Amino acid sequence: MKKNIAGVIFCLVFAIISYFICKCEFCKSINLNSLTLAIIIGMVIGNVFLRFIPRSWRYGITFSGKKLLRLAIILYGFRITFQQIFAVGGQGLIADICMLITTYLIGYYLGTRVFKLDKDLCMLTAIGSSVCGAAAVLGTDSMLKAKSHKVSLAVSTVVLFGTAAMFLYPVLFKCGILPENVFGIYIGSTVHEVAQVVAAGSAISPSVTDTAVIVKLTRVMMLVPYLFMLGWYLAKKSKTERTKVPIPWFAILFVVMCGINSLKFIPAQVISGIVEFDVLLLTLAMFALGVETNFEKIKGLGLKPILLAFIMFIWLVGFGWYISHLFV
Image 1 (cartoon, rainbow, N blue to C red):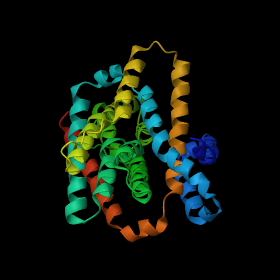
Image 2: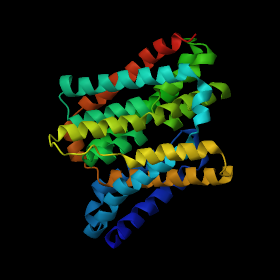
Image 3: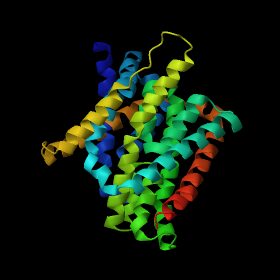
Image 4: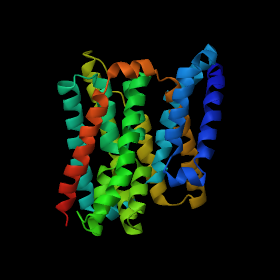
């Protein structure tokens, strides 16, 4: 444990810097969150100044990007209540399930069969687009244990196309493609990150924002059964008869935290503090991930992962509209 301390402190310092920078009005106006800023800073440090970082710190950096990440995923459960999920009803759930399954299968199939990309990269990119962005990528990586540059690339596609969605959806609303009462379902079931959902919904109306966030948080909950299926797949892939299916305990604890939050016996101020602490932990993990990212390895992958993410983005916008249109 002692060998991790220096590296964790190093990551924590830059996580805190990223966290407070993104509290300023300018960052809020351009919807720059601390997770995105942290991974950018981490990439710069990891590729330009890595030789100045003591090797003894590398253990703590890896620990931050792997172990502390799981704690962050667990605490993410305090953002959601079961009451919020039930409030949206069947329409939001149906939209979420349709978009999650189809987007993931399209992403994985095209990535492995058409673009001939690495399976781990395809899984990470597909789950980032279909569930909940960077949190889903990081949660999946905690089981896959993929190379850091693959994780960073998957997160980058979420940032790129999720940011594009923030500006696109308000324009689509003004074009009148869907009425306001279902547009929240459309946003929540198709936009990548929770923060991006909030930004897109806020540009339309408070009611659209509320519905969009709840539908989005329902998608976040679906990360849990996905991780169980991934664990079963990894056990089967090992071809060892006695291999046990790895249980994603952090995913189970995530649901437990949702349940605790649903009971509403914890003061709102405490919940708010936990959520902010969780943002800091996720920021720390993203910075560590950035430091371990090697641009040369990403360059070697070419444009295929970006093109794959773009196709999934078009699918989310197009098929998501069709599904939401059925609820009009």
